[in-house]
Length: 284
Image (cartoon, rainbow, N blue to C red):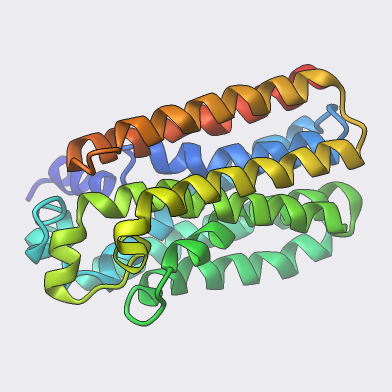
């Protein structure tokens, strides 16, 4: 394999060719950056966090595929991933993940000491999430914590502390993650049942659509409460209303539980996060 071909396999392993994961990790981080800075982000800190999102999402994908290398060959959607197909070795994957995590850590060294402490928790969450699918009935909740941990880290970087508001925002992200990742899990439900992986799509069963709807409502309600407590101006609520309309569209898409439609709804969740972010930006 040539160097160019190997780098292409690394790119696929990090899912840089599929940026949806970066966006789903980025939006809550941006919510935290804008709210913690009262609409006046410190651009160097913002750049550090954006780059950190890309690096940690890439590392998370590598760790996920390493953990699932025994399962992925048996799932139609994942059987051609580099580790599953054998084009990248497990040792290479671990070295790549370690290198990406180290780069992310070096990025945050200039920030508050609390950010460094929280980064250890963030790394643990990213590394341990793939293994929760073996024993946790709703691993999507764990994913929501991992994907939203940029929120408390943003407050720590800008305030030197993590207020209750940050944890409420993280809770909103957890509910959103359960909603969108259940849509994602519905794509692979038949394969996951066969190989014994636990997902929210399996746990919720025939109540999956209702559970997704409840999670969207809970996420929006928590965000609305945070906005009320902060006396945020009306454009924020316009953003929430747009996000609610997008969520309703997702529920319409997945009404028949058809895998391609579920995957389409999952991908479309970037607009849910973007609508909320646009409302935050416009309110300042």
